[in-house]
Length: 275
Image: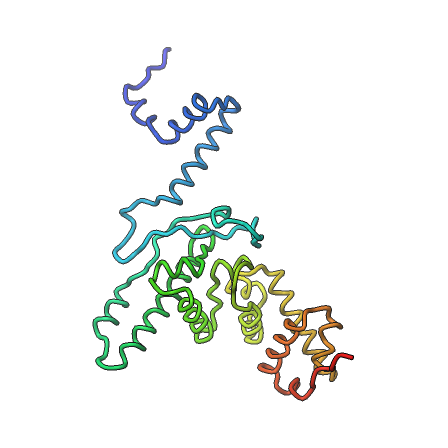
């Protein structure tokens, strides 16, 4: 029995995927496995979806911008690496919300306006960073420059406000440079040790801070070693060579120990003078 072909069969074949397959075979002469070409076409479709999401999904007050998506393959940056060399994703970022509009509508008269506007901007920055962290396909990170473009604030103000929000909320709020250890960034240890001292386990600290569990564990172990040495009356200036760490790193750990365990009183143990 001869199988009849439906006259409608071709209607479903005029797809981007089929056009890509034809282009790869005819224009680029890629005559390898048809299955490999189909997989390549599927990946190209996914890239298009990631970079050009459907406009009808974008709500009022949102702005489209491409960010860096974290993946298990790339936890660190390297000098000279361009922003486009990372895994990228385009999202609609919630720049203006109903809450922002209401806050502006009810701005108090007089000098209080400046403080209210400052709080709106800080809230917006925190919201934008959190929006990327909650991306279902993996956290998406913005740079300080990205945040400057989205908010219209200078990079200096963005950096200052983000740091203020971190201190006020206790959240890491990692930007791209913070996550990939590139560029100018705040110290990681403050957030990690704050969570650790609050009883949070390493896996949860890694998730909240946007760092690998190995990096989190290293910071915690260094902190415990510094506490142990201080408890044995080792002067802070002698700890760096004993632990083979930079003096600035040890100084930061000493400051954290002093904050959370003042009974160790590292301030009463002056560093050993060289020579």
